[in-house]
Length: 257
Image (cartoon, rainbow, N blue to C red; front, side):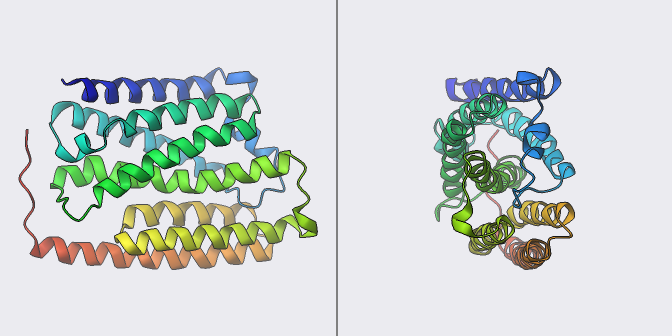
């Protein structure tokens, strides 16, 4: 196993262990859910069950680490150290968040988002042709992870503002929640549409449906989140059908063991 492949495996294992410990111990005697639930006026926050997606994300990260550790994938090599950098951002964010350093936590969160964006763009470079296994074990994990971190970055920014006593310039928090949903929905919808990415779209739908579930009585927030969940869901369905038809007419690049 080459140095970069080994580093990706080690970084993934360390990140998963730190995540488990952060909830099991938990770090600073509080779980991530307990911290998030303190911000009752964060209307970009989905219901608690939505955060169960982290389990799927970490399983997909492990699948990626095993896959790239066993195969020499040109597209994974093109990532360079971005996967490791993302793992560092993830782990550092957990520590800062659990010790209530919300403003500081934005730096590792941004680092994680940048790392995922860099890998996402490399996967979709015009010259890149993925094998079927790379689609499942490289592209899908990155899309899943990137979509969730897109949502988490916006939510984290909301934590910082609310914790800092931001008054919303006199605009109600509910209205700001709807504004953030519209911004997030437009960004996510654009990414999903441009890349015909059903996995990315599915995560956004899951997140926005969770916002509706958490705030059903806040009409503006629920309607905004519900509308964009439907919109992004339709984009994701279009992407899935479009990619299926393209795949049927385009031969896959052979895998390299």
